[in-house]
Image 1 (spheres, helix red, strand yellow):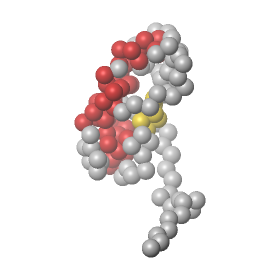
Image 2 (cartoon, rainbow, N blue to C red):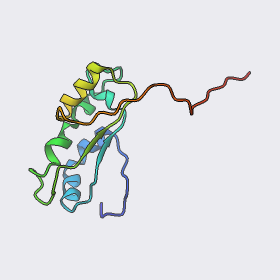
Image 3 (cartoon, one colour):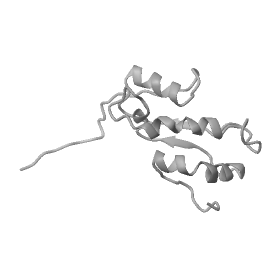
Image 4 (cartoon, rainbow, N blue to C red):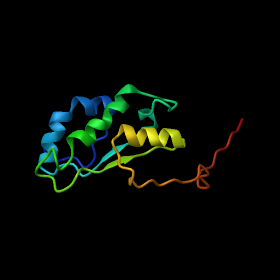
Amino acid sequence: MNGVYSIVYVCPETVLRLIEPLKRLAENNGIALFAIDEVHCVSKWGHDFRPDYRRLSVLRENFSAAHIRSLRSDIPLMALTATATLLVREDIRKSLLMSNETKLILTSFFRPNLRFSVST
């Protein structure tokens, strides 16, 4: 991890194994953002609950300005899903230690740009 990557796409299980190397990278301002896709898997109320997703609160616990002195602010965390109910969204927010002021962007399930066709 010497700064040659723009994006590192890994599963939660790998992130949990790489906390120490990621901390070293963060100390050199090498991490701009953590994005968690399929974040509904964090929630015990979600349809695809995975325990390692629930442990991703370590990103908040370890990658803040309070824990890494060279950071000017906490490394942002973006949580993405298309399938979270209100209960699941609240569970995600609490599980990932996100504040009540966390910006939430909701859109419709309707996607006019997508087309499906079936042919025989």
